[in-house]
Image (tube, rainbow, N blue to C red):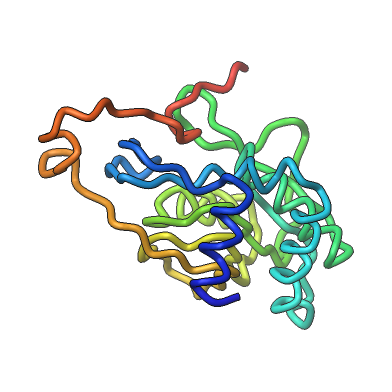
Length: 192
């Protein structure tokens, strides 16, 4: 999928929002990708997940892992396409962890799946957790790449949609007094 097709898909399903947003990375942006406009359409989510899975069909993936909530929904669909197991990690008091009895067999080949990737900080945190639990992370697949992630392994992005972001202390949207909206899951608390 090229950049123009990605932009059209996101715009047509109402996933590309404009305003002033606090991203999970801590940076600000005038545009936000509300992936739930895609995820609310199961057939579209399934089709996109199948495209993401196609690049990993020869990797002997035993487990697909995502981040709660949006990443987990896509990861589940990718796991279904790869016919393997699935798990997700979630934040509790700011710390990413596996709960609900999820476990990883030592040496299991794990594919990490994310919804929207900007800096890759949350995904790298998940990679580290999976490795600590004994997994062998073989790659990262994301639905939308909106920035330049800093990951220690290769990744695949189904859609690339570079969108400008700003550090909070040098944000032109802040300077213009546009109210800041925090939508990312990093800012939401998961009850224990």
